[in-house]
Image (cartoon, rainbow, N blue to C red):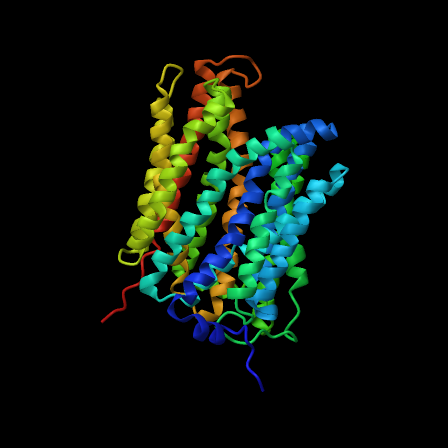
Length: 486
């Protein structure tokens, strides 16, 4: 019987020692496309809202629909990789991302725009856990930090450069160009996939096309629970309290049922959507807690910082973007340096340092006032991004290195799911706390100009994020490897 020419073993023999780096580059291009599709849309929302005569609530679904689809689809990656292998899963995701961009860009009504965004979110969720699986399977332990750092450097360029390019495209060609922006990346990733991505499943084994079906009940419970949680937080922010409590109660019920169902599947020998054996590893459990809180702080601050500069300090949008640009460059430089350190230094130390710097950057925002120099904002943004640079290459390695090889795919999708869930909750949490503190100070976001009370409310919201990072530091220190007793 002839060997599959696209198998992992065949590709290793064909390309030699450099193959694992070629494979990492191939999936990096697709991951950059998926991240770019999630970040650049914000610059097109005002233009799109005007085109379709949308209110703020409906326009926000362009971003939240993507986020919900991406968060939930992350849980399907292990099953897809085992059933169809790396290449088919990756190629199908890139085709879905391409189709979503084309549908959204050519849409004549807002419903089709939403369909395109949900398709892009599904594709992004499937793709994003794959690189961590490849790094942990394909690289030796002493190379994993460097691989994670180089991959992270490439990926952070997408959100750093994407909004700038997106803004120019919107000004020159309109909001539709944002959707077509991913097309060249998708085409390049498809070419690389057929050349370097193996057709086999994780571990080099053949994909089991006749394998077990996906856990549809678990997927339904996870989807409904995520929708209830995110909409419940939005209702806490804008809607009646009774509806918010009902939605949050629904989220809690779905979570309890999801955990019960996953445990039942595990006991009966069937394949759960999220293998609860993962949480029997202390380092993975601690890493999951850090990932959720870190996602909350990261996405919350990404939303809060530009709003603070524009509505708190009354700076223009272009000036706010310029202030944040040096931080993005510093982040891209920091990640590969810390990646090399992760091969030699304990990951729990690196993650803890990163969380400390991130918390410090948030806490020092209390010192910013109307007469502060712009250099202070630049310095605090850079400090926070250095902290992120310590966390990004280290967290997945610290949480997933102890896992049994058979659980790596599950671990990557689970920790990605929790990070994105925290991120989605973080934006709403910042909005809720900000409104509460503004009301306490008797200020308003809608009034023109700025005042000390409004700035104080923003500062207290940043302190909330700092406290979250401090809590995550406790879990991060527990990421340290257990020393066996002599």
